[in-house]
Amino acid sequence: MSNPAPATGIAAVPDAGASTTNYGAVLVQQDNVMRQQDAALTDLSRSIGTLRTMGGQIHNELTLQSNLLDDLERGVDRTQGTLASQQGRMKKLLQKTKNNWLYCSILLLIVVLCIIIYIMLTI
Image (tube, rainbow, N blue to C red; front, side, top):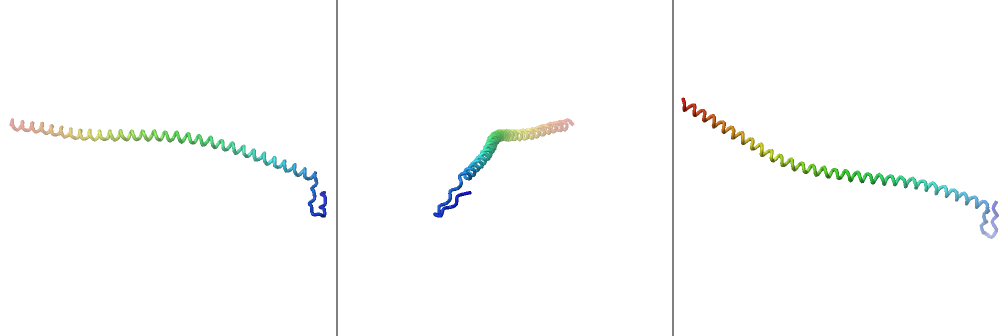
């Protein structure tokens, strides 16, 4: 039991044995809470480390993909330029081929005309 309060209005002094037991229990409880918090912080630290590693890997992959896309874009631009050049050459070749057929047709008609004139003159 605790001491009764004196008539002067001063609070009673708690029993020393009960206070030590409560204080020890509070310390044990605080120690347990701190250990749980330390364990949670360790887990959180591991998770953050894993996320950091994954972030680095994602960054490296994105950099690699960006470089590959840049190389592909340069290759496509180069190929488009070559294709445009070859198409121009093809148009010129087709025009020359068309003109050659015209020249061959004219030459053939001249030969036929000469043969007809020769036949007409010999008859």
